[in-house]
Image (cartoon, rainbow, N blue to C red; front, top):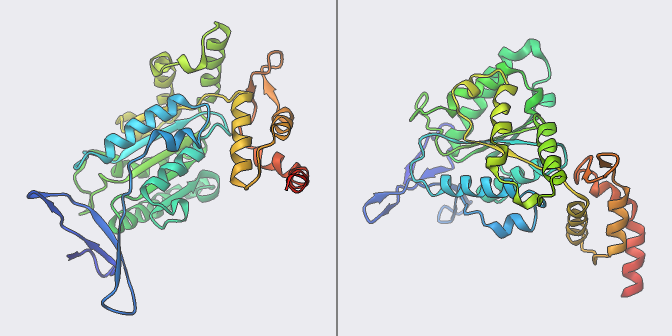
Length: 324
């Protein structure tokens, strides 16, 4: 065992694993007990991610599933990545961006957002004042540096990127670039995820154009959105864009009523309820849809499903008692 930076984190050890003479470089977190003979060792990195895990939890997003699955599997299978994995998720609210980022975090660290190795930043909460950009940059860089030193496969999620000052975004740039180390720390096994509503209107229009032309939603391919995705590069005036440091722009399509129903069923199961299709339909009918004439896509995706289901909770409980 080689103890890493004991002055900062005495409970972190690096196991220099050798498989047939090859260094695997796995970093483990170590929990010490009062009995010095007892320790618990568990790895920072727990991927792989499987298609079924996404199919059962994320609905209506075949493009996002496909891109993210390939990106994460490729990254996790690479023993020596040249840079951190950088994903930028785009689409309207309620389409699954936050949910997918949480699923990814759980795959890397089972505790997900509760893990001390997963870090969520909200632009309007953590970086609200433009006159303090310099302070934010310094604090953010120190936070990233300290946490990647503790666990190289740390996950950083930045929500509301469309509301973040470009100067704060640029503070992340040194950690995303093709450097083996920055000030003695390697960031190449970390994951950075950007979430943004920017480009949502363009993605919605592309989906609607497909529907209007009589094509199946599931037939939309990334190549059909290449021009659109390339235009997203101009949404931020940032050196991250200029240096092409984002590995994948991931589009999230607007959700149809059938996808909203899938969300309602999943939420009912998560609460331990039997799925009642009358309630599923009632919740879906309470959502608002666009365009006004065709009413194809949910205005808020699945964002308000939990709140809508709360209203029907008494009915669900009465129905369960009647059955059992």
